[in-house]
Picture 1 (cartoon, rainbow, N blue to C red):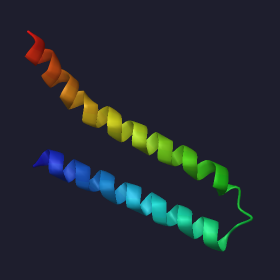
Picture 2 (picture 1 turned 180 degrees about the vertical axis):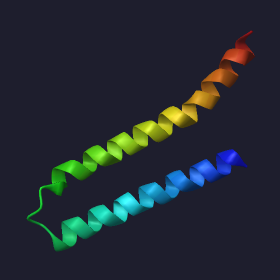
Picture 3 (picture 1 turned 90 degrees about the vertical axis):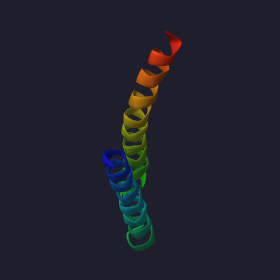
Picture 4 (picture 1 turned 45 degrees about the vertical axis):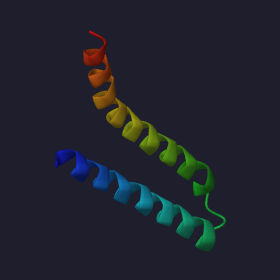
Amino acid sequence: MKLLIRYTIYSVIIVVLLLLALDVYRFHPEAQFAFIFPGIFLLAFSSIMDDAMKGISSRLRLGRR
């Protein structure tokens, strides 16, 4: 159940970041956020993947023995 809640929170964060980026691109084209938001997406995605792969790598290690 904890895993489902965590992935739900991750999904909400990604959707909010996407909507925020679209809002900035549409209504504030002069903003310098055009270069910041891709970096924020990369950081969020890498932390989500690190968290997701942490459980998989421990299960793989147990399977090899």
